[in-house]
Image (cartoon, rainbow, N blue to C red):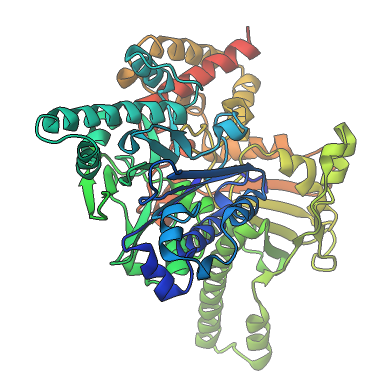
Length: 625
């Protein structure tokens, strides 16, 4: 109901054959650009704040540009970028001279990079939009970078760069990585220069350096300092490219290669669709590895960092990635199914008096799984009852008809009607407008009798639920509303690339704090503050997440009941309950993506513990001091 801002999305294409090959086979010089556009458009869900495109032309002569970049802000950034690029490409390009296109045409090259951005740091604007570019007259020292990542130790990376004598222009993890990798790239250039300077003269020496750059060595020099989740894509001006994934697999990366092309993207089905290839041919990039393509087009997979424990992000499966992936579709259905036992208990088995639905549309697949499992349970009950009656000789046509008439009642209750521009309103006026974002289907609920059970992907802040959704659903006059979250309670912020609310904006955290205050247990809050302060005096590797103590005195159901109390407006007529997925249900449904730190507090890297401890200290000092 209240969208989390998604992780960023990346796309990179390396053409492995001469440009004229694609013109001959596909009838256009813009084959690479066309495929990049599709990769970006089909990942549009991952970032709607800004977008950027970069292109490297390998055969541009001296005196002509060899790196092209275009960036734009806003939800229409992709279309704006490609319209601008289109205006710069010569008219009648497909009939133009081959050498002219290969050498001079802007944005027609061998390497293409695309990025879709959601800010996870609060910094926005064109200067923070990927790809970032480090220019140099030596192509082997020029570097273009984009990524889906967030680093938890930005200050440490900054100190490392500053101590080397560099002066970054922006305080952001992307800018720091650009300079850090760039510095390692400079050192690799120096190594090759010293190796060959006595036997080869310029300009042949410069070409020799371009041909022999060891990108794996560059990454091994820079990456050990990174604490975070990341998929980072980069390319030098001379045409060496890479895509690297963090060693715990926190952020996703997939690739495809054949004799024509190498492709990297954040999601598997995007590559399948754009290149019309089977699922099995699109591989997941192993955590800690990098896909590297050198200037000559030789492709290899290199291990850069040792693979760590598996912390693949479970929110990718619940919410972020496209549901058209076969595994994700199946897992989302399982998430819906795994909530059913508790749901049946909550409704007291009253199928006849309960209507099941979903809101928003992203919860539809979990809804399918939930209703299929409800139907299976109901069928089992009907079979058992029919068998029992038959054995007792009490089964007649009327009884059979009555039993078979029972069904799981499903309806399309909420319909996204209009995108209201509530920014023009303030206060209560804004809240009133928000209650009209969804329309409801009247006549599906029996007034004062039926329970409405409605499933969502997640309940994070709870703001939208309280300000609009519950009021919208209450118009139908149900006796009771059960809001179901297919994911567990979000108790901790994310620090690895999801733009998640601050600690005190999380409804589960607010509920736990209120339970402590209501029960006269403010000592736990005070002790947690002291323990967070103590942890922050320790090295990152020795810190633990002290904030888990806030939740320790309570069961999940107690926290859920408090959340329901806090989110129910006083004018709601129906009884409101909230049902969350359990951690066990999550891991059963999504077994290969166990990263659950936003639910459990089990952060995958030391920096996460430091940041959540610091977040609690900030909260406590703002609230209680």
